[in-house]
Structures are given as C-alpha cells and as structure tokens.
Image (cartoon, rainbow, N blue to C red; front, side, top):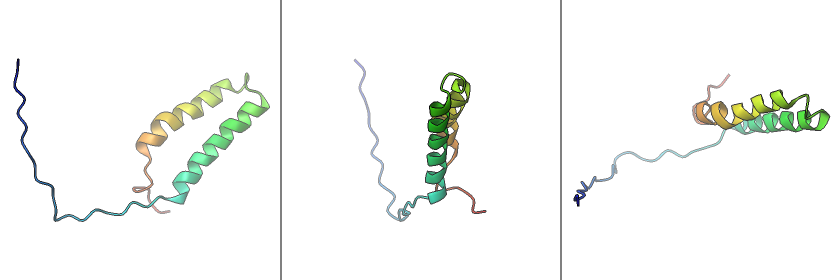
Length: 75
C-alpha cells in the first residue's frame, strides 16, 4: 500500500482579503434572461423550444463561466 505524504503550506497573511460586492447589472441580466424564457414558454412552448434551449444553455454555461460581477467593465 502506498504512503501519502502531505506538505504543510503556511497561509499568506500579508495579503488582505478583498470584500466581494455584487454588481446589480449582473443580477439584472440573469433576471432578464429568466423573464425571456418565461415569456417564450407562456406564448408558445412548442414553437419556441429551440429559443428556450438556447437561452437556457447560455445561462447554464457561458453566462455563469465567463461573466463575473467582480470583473465586469463599467460602461
């Protein structure tokens, strides 16, 4: 059986933690996408299925992975 070696690492005490604040535009963008999916579902869910899937895929992948409320540029 193999032995597991652990190397302890001291925490970095010199760097203060930055306070995280949310950008209201980020939250509003998510809200708008959900409202769009809800609207498409209420009007005609069968005909709008591909549009709903596209928005849903964007929310689940790109929007969550690439957009960050901390790194968004101010326009």
